[in-house]
Image (cartoon, rainbow, N blue to C red; front, side, top):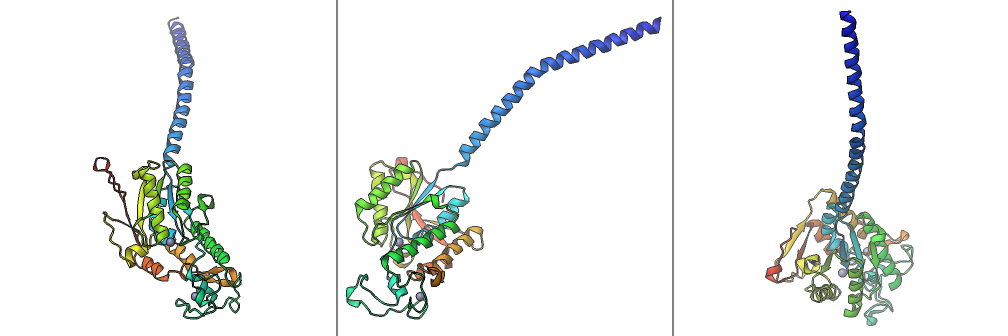
Length: 323
Ligand SMILES: [Zn+2]
Ligand SMILES: [Zn+2]
């Protein structure tokens, strides 16, 4: 009898224990579901925050001519790309007016600036010979200004691809190179400021020796003055020619950005230079960069750095940014 009572007691205890467990589980279910829901919504919020964080402010490069994005901005583009920032290129001109066109054609023609030299041969110092579009089977025949401009734009898009910039991030304009006017430049800048509010802008310095370059710098400086953009969003770049050849003295503290030889960024920069060196005229590649400013390309490959400075702002607002 004693043992039966004990067994009954034990069963009763087990039953009670099971009931308690069931009750606990039932009650537990609600907070569990809630915590799941919370966890999910929390995850979503975190993901949203991460997504917001993952899209850094874009950087807009104001490029006067095809090759400036490599020669002057190439190092900076690589650095910003490594930081994961979206890169946009605004190309102002097709660069159709260049002595490289006559060099490639092997002679001056009626579209040359110097009309007195029409028909006169011109030596390609880079190749050490006089070119002949006919004998070399140029894909576009003798290059008119229009064809030459198109070839430069083709090279520009090829470079952008090498640099990892999608073509949807490129805007091109057809301002007549060497003859930009303030109103033309202002209108391009205004439309870029409207399209990319809050973005960082990279421009050439108003001290640049090339009038097209300097004008873009001046017009962006005007945009700062008229509060269309904050000074903290702007960096002025000293073009490789202005910096290393003309050695213009910039009266502000200059910063130097470099990339290491052999790094991924360095390799991409070299690849972009290679596009401007690629001479395959039958396929429409005319080494537009090297036929125009070979010494500047050589200088960049020798020392992969670029110089820039910050807009001068009132001391109370002055911000020092890392390079
Ligand atoms: Zn230029
Ligand atoms: Zn040549």
